[in-house]
Image (tube, rainbow, N blue to C red):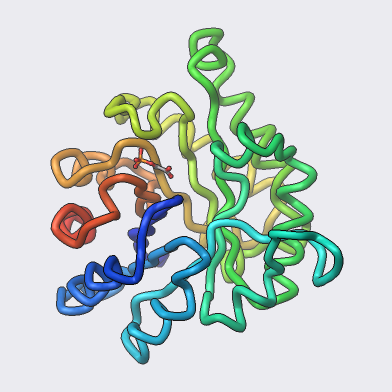
Amino acid sequence: MRRKLAAGNWKMNGTPDSLAEIEALMRMQAAPGVEILICPPATLIAQAAARVGDHPIAIGGQDCHPKAQGAHTGDLSAAMLAAAGATHVILGHSERRADHGESDALVRAKAEAAHAAGLIAVICVGETLEEREDGRAEQVVTRQQAGSLPDGASAANTIVAYEPVWAIGTGKVPGTDDIGAIHGAMRAALAERFEDADEMRLLYGGSVKGSNAAEIFAVADVDGALVGGASLTAQDFSPIVAAL
Ligand code: PEP
């Protein structure tokens, strides 16, 4: 049985005042078997983890460097995130692929570093609008997934998030049939490579809100969501958690 996951990606948003949103989520009673993950900016990871304490809400990073340490100004290693209290790290988000030219090979190396540090990698894949309109969405997503997941990936250390680039922050969401087709193709490709593919969690991400979460979560092979804008406040995020 795959545990459901509502993951929030705060991106470059949040100050110490924002930790009140995590405290509000802590007061929420999530259904049994539903996990919550909040990935604040790196500056807030330690404070967020301290506020969460023993509560099951997990805290994650939004990126890590593939190397364990060294002369990489401004970067953070996976072990640094873990030491600050993170248990997860988002890797290969389309904004990093676009803004920082991250390739599948780099994302894969980062995932290996995350696993070595004991972090669960939340690896993002997704097609652009042009690729979808060309009929290449499934091909692009499965190619990114194949290239970004290391051989050591398993259900215990890896979650894959399907995030169509054109759906992120736009209010546009693919049809549930489209989401189901991509998630089905992703799981079939995972099954060819990983023994525990049936146990690996696949998230959908891209303009998930309280108003559309339930229909997205009803799609086969959707095990939860990676949420950007609607994860910034407990008011917006809690209906998504409740829909799982
Ligand atoms: C994201 O950036 O991972 C995301 C899904 O953003 P939004 O929910 O705002 O579309």
